[in-house]
Image 1 (cartoon, rainbow, N blue to C red):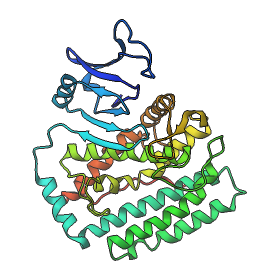
Image 2 (cartoon, rainbow, N blue to C red; image 1 turned 60 degrees about the vertical axis):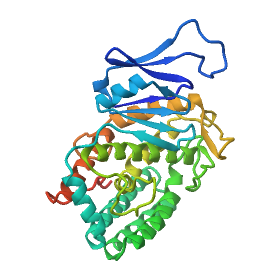
Image 3 (cartoon, rainbow, N blue to C red; image 1 turned 45 degrees about the horizontal axis):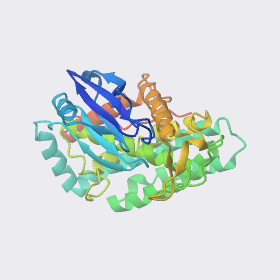
Length: 345
């Protein structure tokens, strides 16, 4: 366990001597009578954690927060619909050399462009890999073959882009072609027609958005712990409150990690339409309280297991660290950045 997800409404993360415990003072819906005493849900030793994610009306006490900071554990808050609210991180790395190198590289558009091109090229490569794996069981689906061919053709022009802005537009075009093929991979009660968000109109889009937010937050925490400024990217332009560097690194990980997880969870019926409800405040749909519990159990299992198509039986959790370390080595000038690339099917 590297991340503790707390989803029960009104659950509280507390400090108990040198451990962290999660307690519940009310019934899960928060409407029933107070129990005679607190119910302990889980106890975790701090050395097993890197992040505590509080979803919805979950809370953390001041004593527990202080223990997290002392033990190097980040704390992040998410709304029930999956929106990221904020993150509290321990003291940053005391070495400033990485940030100085990052600032110099990001400030020079021509120096940053090749790295941005690498992110997009890896994203397209992995998009082809995911669709090719789907096609292996769906040879009679010409849409998949067409999407793969179009993505491969687009891949040959990545190196010809001359600005980061043009690269972002190019990447958006590739994403539309990719999702046109991905929809054929959904075979259960949860279907996917096209990518839509803000708010997500259906369960598949809600899951994709939630997964991207979780992965981006995990990357931001890892980058910050290594001494990066996660808000200064090489591909995504600076925007207030947006972790641009984490989004840069997310590009090559979206399809092999999040999209594969969502496909798996839906097609194996781990997540079903009954696990979703209308979001009356923001529109669209969101996971129910039960759905959140099911989602995070499946997510943790997926993140801890070896990722298919990657050499070395490495899990997504460890892949995130590896890619953050590779990026740090690149920025420091030690070796060129090596993106995550799925093996061809």
